[in-house]
Image (cartoon, rainbow, N blue to C red):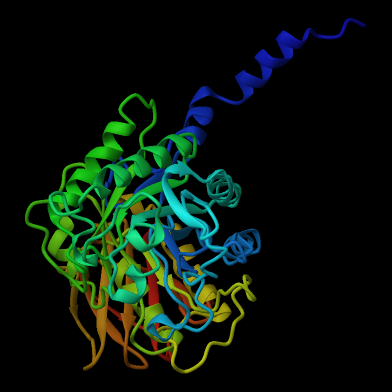
Length: 464
């Protein structure tokens, strides 16, 4: 019996595995072409939902990111955010206990080498150990279906952070950074730091060009510390120019404001507009017409109850947002599996139970053809008691995703076309379907009685 030649075997494999599938696996996460309020990744519509560590996974060598990423995968979450090392925090900053963004300042990793007896940074020499760790982190995330949002820069909120920065003249051998912390990220007052920043961005873009699970964020919270809009636009152009010859280009995100703000003059190079503490999610409606992803990529400062941040996630996604990232303080260098019991002083939450609750939201929204969904206000008619709110995504006459928070039971009255519908009421706390069934509707107003619930309830309604 003659064995088939290797060339024939390869040809048969390629026939069984279409070129489009290979292309999709190597194409970076992008805006969905049918509905750019959401993403596409590996050929599939995607929403990013997570509860991640405090952005120090790469710069902090004591943090076991493999355990951390396995935890996100196990919890059914698909996003993490990390900073480059141009900024880090002293221990105890912002009352954060065991802060992953506060590594040992002698062991801390960043893009530049330390030299001499004082171990100061040389802003002209790259640190191979840093780039090896960064690339391995992104590679491990890719294996687990996790997207990395790499935040390139961060303002120096106070002198304590500026005192630690490689950009500070006290910490580098290059004679750069003899300026106030509020002039570091500017075009005209940086006194030689801008070329260093540009080279860092170009180096990162080159090193990470082959990774599809990557989004570049220009700067974390640039509305503090004197950071100018012109500087942000300049950095976005540096990223774009550095990728000009790349077949596949990465998305750029911009952090706009805490809370909400209408974006009057959007940067055309930006595809993801992020906000912090975006509850209520009014910013989604204000900026929905941009036809870009609106995200909430940091939460906190509202206590430690899981319910606070669960509701923030549900209302954002059911308002048409495409990205949610809870800042989870249960991840530390001693608890990379997210089990740290943080003290009462911690400025936010995060827990094993909370991450499970977020996974129920992700499963709920993934159960729809969500690319066809849009936020609506005209569907809802009546039936909400006081202190209750409803958020609705719909594809008229086909599918409806409804989230109600507040109260213990509701009788919704909605306007929908004639048809036969299948209903499932889901408990966001447990992920369980509390009530299900089918109904025939003659069109117009429809009254729906929810099951009794504790804090919130979600309804999936699909026309058959």
